[in-house]
Image 1 (tube, helix red, strand yellow):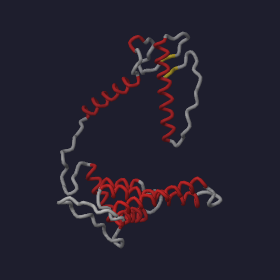
Image 2: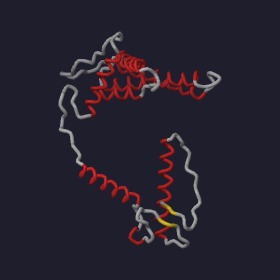
Image 3: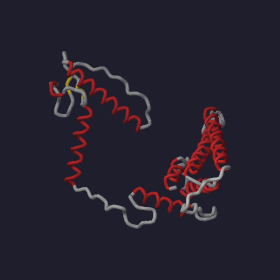
Image 4: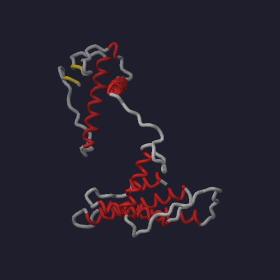
Length: 243
C-alpha cells in the first residue's frame, strides 16, 4: 500500500504555487477515491491507482485546454488527450467491476483492510502521517519500528576522496572505451587535443569521441534549462582545442 500511495501521489497534478492546504486536500481526496473502489487485493489496488491517475490526467488536460490558452477553449490537442484519459478512467472502472463481480478467495491470516479517516478529518495531518511513513520506508525503517533496520553508514573524508577518484577513473575509462589510447599521441593532460593538419586514425577517432561527448554534455545542459533543440554543429579548424 505504501508503494501504491507513493505512485498515486506522484501522478497528481499538484501546482507548486497553490496553498499547501489545497494540495493536502487533493491528495487526501485521492486516497478517499481509492478507498471508495474497495480494492480487495494487490491487483485491484493497482487498477484503482491507474483509474485515479487517468481521472487526474483528464482533469488536468481539460484545464489546459479551456483556461490556459487565448481564446479560451482553442487547444484541441488537450481536449483530445482529456477525452482519451476519461475513456481510460472508464475502462479501468469497468475492469475493477468485472473483477469484483467474482468472489475472491481470501487466504487464511490475511490482515483486515486499511480504513482511511473520514473526509471531515484534517487532510494535512493525514498527509503528514503518510509522508512520515513513506520516508521511513525509504530510510530503511519498517512501518512500525522506531529504529533503523541497519546502522547508517558514515563516510569519512578519506573514503569520499577515494570513492570520487574511483568514479572519475570509471568515467574516463567509459569515455575512452574502444579507443587505442596507448598509441594516440598528442592527448593533453586534461584529456583534450589540438586539431592538427594530418591526424592519425587513432587521433581522428579520439577527437571524434571528444566532440561527441562535448555535444552530448551541451545537449544535457540545455535540457536542464528547458531547451530541447539539438546543439548547433560548429566547424573544426586546424589549431582548435577540442576539450
